Length: 128
Image (tube, rainbow, N blue to C red; front, side):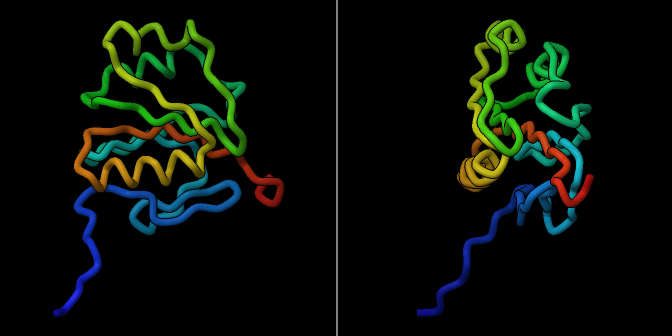
């Protein structure tokens, strides 16, 4: 029997490190929003402290069933008032550090789920 590796037919995070991730092999050093349907947008925040309700309102406009929020190098939770637009649409938000968010997004996207990842990519100490 010949075995073949699974092929992921969706956009995925192929690598990550301090201050960067790679999407389909392309190195990204700024915060980004991606979906399993192929959407990729710059997410206008350089750090968790830059976030506000407008960032989460942008997520509420996506046609997905779940949003994975990568809060940077460490786990930080968004304020409840920032999530009002998501709650109004009954859209789930899961929060984790960015590296865990990348792994979780890949698993769900690989299963064919309609998922988005909003990933804060903070500059690493060596990139500052």
